[in-house]
Amino acid sequence: MRDDIDQVLIDRHEIAARVQTVAQQITSDLQAHEGGNLLLPDGPGLTLVPILTGSIIFLADLMRHLPLRLRIRLVAISSYPGSATTSRGATILEHLTNLPEDLTGQHVLLIDDIFDSGTTLKAAKSLLEKRNAAGVRTCVLLRKKRAETLDQHVDYCCFEIPDAFVVGYGLDYNDYYRNLPDIVTLKPQIFARSS
Ligand code: IMP
Ligand code: MG
Image 1 (cartoon, helix red, strand yellow):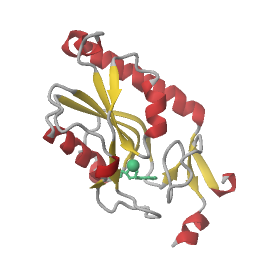
Image 2 (cartoon, protein in one colour):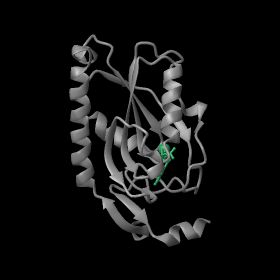
Image 3 (cartoon, protein in one colour):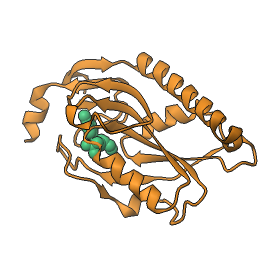
């Protein structure tokens, strides 16, 4: 697996430091919001909604730096099926999604691994809004620098990266490489093999 790596773009130490900083930012924003009501032991709390599967490692690290009353609901969306490396549009996978039909009064933090074309995050956000979430904030580990998405807003982003296909720290190629601790690019022959 290590032999398949071309370049390490962001190493595990940089990721850990930045995830902690972003978590602190989220916490202080929520403290400011509604006079900190969301954080009270008997307050409504925050609902984390990770988009499966790519966000699981980011979620695990981020949530351990959120000293909040929170719970988790899952949304599964497929946009890069199999060995695709460009978006094929967002399909909600109902069988892996456990979102309540009614989210009235719930403040949600939607979490994804990477914002590329923005289609996935947009689909998930509109699903949450249709179910009446009181507020939806968005948080991504990575965002690809692409001219055509500059006008699209994300509330929290850990790193902006060049428009390249990356894996590791939860991100996959053909469902492999999620367990790499760093964010890396793969050697071109890896893609050539499966096309
Ligand atoms: P979007 O809908 O184009 O923004 O793509 C977002 C989704 O596509 C993410 O949730 C990822 O699962 C996947 N994705 C986008 N870019 C990459 C990449 O470079 N590596 C791995 N997965 C990616
Ligand atoms: Mg994904």
